[in-house]
Image (tube, rainbow, N blue to C red; front, side, top):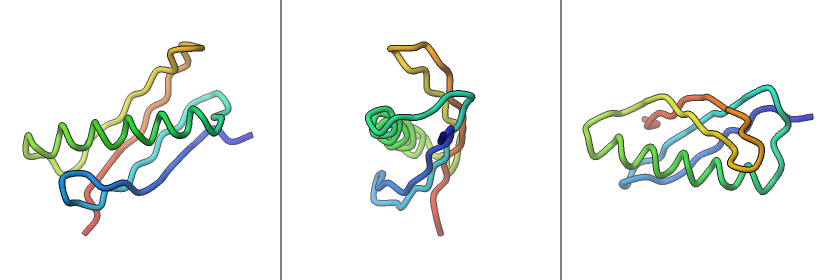
Length: 74
């Protein structure tokens, strides 16, 4: 079982890495939702001047919580 996901997304012309994990298995569909969430969260924070930050995601189907981090890659 995989309880974490990580990846690279583009946000505001930056390459952003992210990691999310929790106590429950992550399906491919949920993995895609988390990737979209990470990208949107990073974009919102970057325009406010941040270069890294916390991620929190709650699966709307199961209410399971996943936490993690994003950061702009050098």
